[in-house]
Length: 132
Image (spheres, rainbow, N blue to C red):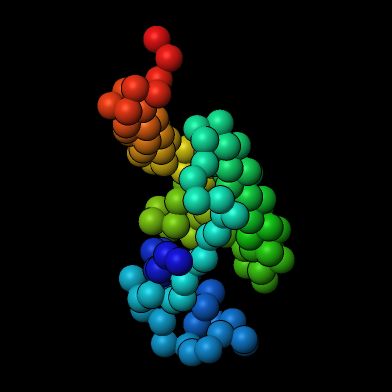
């Protein structure tokens, strides 16, 4: 289980204005809830991890596209393109959003994958179970 924080003003605004929100005084950086991820195995192979990450990224893209569709229905929708809310009443397109997501997430993801693979290989070498 991972905390789900209000990381952008749009998170706060949407949750404060949503009729089914449990409260309407959310502030930036409030913990708004939790995200639970589970996997039926104790460990995954590097190949499984890559597949999981691909599905996860596709899910992020789909969720953002659904958000863009909802925003298009606003009485005064923001301009969608290559600018961000910090620049004014704008939101990034799906392509711009995913490019920025991948720019931020990819180095950390790759580092973690390499650490995992490296530690597994080191453990296997210590026990003599790796083929040479």
